[in-house]
Length: 433
Ligand SMILES: [Zn+2]
Image 1 (tube, rainbow, N blue to C red):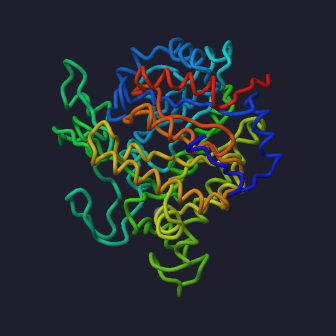
Image 2 (cartoon, helix red, strand yellow):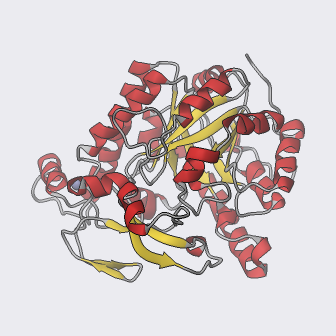
């Protein structure tokens, strides 16, 4: 079939790791749909706690997924805002509801397994309550028109999510609940990926991966894996902020770098510095793996990565070494969203942009997929593209273990029909339970 390609020519995975994955999810392929409860009922441009608290219908979601033959729900239990949507004694839950618990309960009587996505280093709430744990800039620069200085914390305006005040609630009162809210408003929506949100602009922070933030994340992980029947625990934002090249230069990081690499090694621009960054992220991955497996050995661990050039992007900016991370955690999950960069629905120019990114992401995977030492499950987008673009991506980026789709709210009726048909005619699902 056109667009389908034999990825096994490009990389080999340990057959034992593949069969472990099948056993864990009781299926020969994973067919997953993602859901971001705090981003409201449409796309992913809003941060909407009221929707998550009062309107999200858990039974309806599970029913719809079963009807469309999905076998996994990828539930974002901690998004970039930092809210923890389970019954937590460690984290911040602004929705007064145990959404994870409800999905686990309803999921038990269905064929849907729960895989959770857990945002790690990007955490707007923690950035406000623990500014001492936010990563520190090592040079001066400018971001979205705002200047920052060497030594300042990396708390900036959020790029993607916007907030509407709930009806009848004043800004100053809502800020008490959502402390990372600012008075700045984004009034117009554009067509490029970074300009589509409208509403109040919140701040966001990338936390220092050598700070106590890591201990906080590990406590949360243990709480989730211990108290909930989740089949998979996937770390998102297991990396540095890709928007900057000068993080993190806090005293903790500099001291550790000097200790490990000597005082002669150059901070920020040296082979040693990049190795230090990827070691730091790999250390977190190892701690995460240890906590997950000691709490529930049957829970599959995973991590998300962004496609791009190996040296310039993955290693220098993000601190993600694909080989290291996929040797530690069970499943690697590249986020392949070419048609989020542009869709034909916005006109011929944006169609060209989307197609260009599709071509690039495919080429990037052909070049780099051999770096993974584990099964690879890509996640691609249904939101903000049309059914043909969505299917093209699902076919192209199914590396053999199935495909995950982002995301439940924002998927159109025509896409739901296409998703069901894909399950029935193409992916080749078998229930192994
Ligand atoms: Zn640091």
